[in-house]
Length: 263
Ligand code: MG
Ligand code: MG
Image (cartoon, rainbow, N blue to C red; front, side):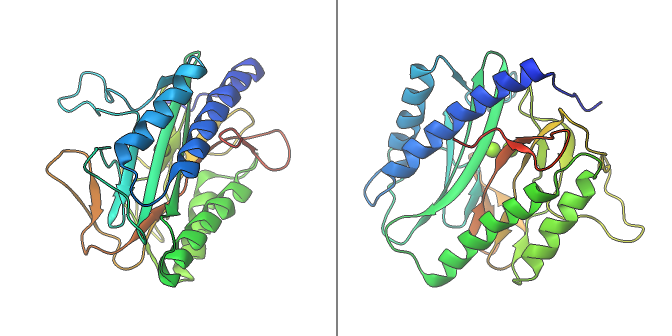
């Protein structure tokens, strides 16, 4: 599959999709407190979508699959990394960390963004994990410039995270974003060294108009993950805490990229 470059007009629509995504994430962030359920957070995101005439990228995803995702957001608590299903029974409590991932579809284009936040006051080690993972996202964004390659982003994120001794999740990666939520290029948070190759991975030279999500997923201890029996929730295999930060960006002709999912 080829990498799809977007026209200036398409980028304007993607910016709006990204802005709506950011508004929903901000509204949910403000609502995070002990006692709220992840289903209530899902309703907040659905309200923002309705107000802006947008749809949820995750609801019913993947189309035609055996287990379409049943909600607007994914909400993952503590050892849950990604793809947690919102539920009225999942109540946030003091000291938890929660990862919220959300995508809006506006005029046919997708925005994809995520953050992890503490509920009330959290442990210093959890706080540090959140800070480093968010910083890793910006380390990657800073490398996303015309003329560089996706592998430059991957290597920079890897080096930064490994400097703290944390684990980098291998199974999930950043990805191109456009009319569909997952397109080329794939943007892992690490890069094979030496002769090692991963099937399907190639480093892509960045050109203006290429749009993709960068999304480091970082674990406090071991990086291996497991899929729960609900077909969606991904947890760390050793039960350790994990964090996830994501933005969708667009490569510009010169200088840093445009962060499409910023407010
Ligand atoms: Mg993504
Ligand atoms: Mg996402």
